[in-house]
Length: 114
Ligand code: 5GP
Ligand code: ZN
Image (cartoon, rainbow, N blue to C red):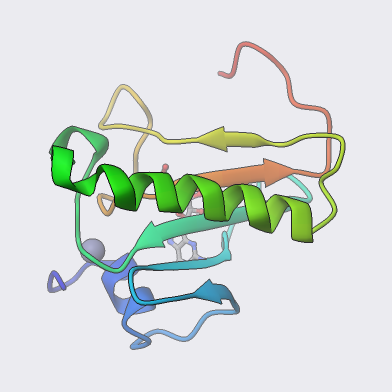
């Protein structure tokens, strides 16, 4: 838990959101500013700022986040596909420095992303 971190506040329940999934290590909830009909964030409860800060011991945690995003996509009916995004640092467009996986779906995605 990092003081002032919005995603720590969400994962600890200090800020209430519409939780789609929660277990001991991660939570999933809807993005406040959706960029697609379905836009979900999957975050660890542990405060890890960026992908650059992930250590080899966190590999299982990252895998868990990805697989849970896949399961949520399936549960929400994204049978035609979806996109997973992890923005890293300023050039990557990261705005919240508590690592998160974006799950986007419900429309045709374009490539390359902006
Ligand atoms: P980033 O640009 O860091 O990869 O993405 C951060 C995401 O978090 C953005 O899509 C933004 O809309 C979302 N976000 C920021 N603050 C909040 C919040 O308080 N609640 C929710 N549900 N999403 C948030
Ligand atoms: Zn945090």
